[in-house]
Image (cartoon, rainbow, N blue to C red; front, side, top):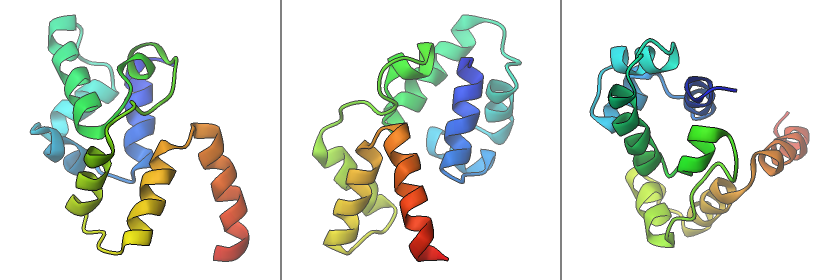
Length: 121
């Protein structure tokens, strides 16, 4: 899987439109479309955006660039707490659950959803 495909997959996993994803990065939906469709050919156009995506969304740069390692960087707890505050999570238990979910590996997240589907239907 290429970098642009990982970005597209990640954005969709967040259920964010290109507009919403780009807004958090300070770029337009067209910039996001160009990244996801691999239209930017020069590395100097892409690299700053990749770093910004990692910083804003807490992604592990190694995972984004090479597809290796954990998807999420080992961020300090206060960054996760700040993120849950920004999205409006006020309940402490819900905040804790969200933070723990964010820290799961991709495989564990898939297992989590398979397990919860039984209770959500």
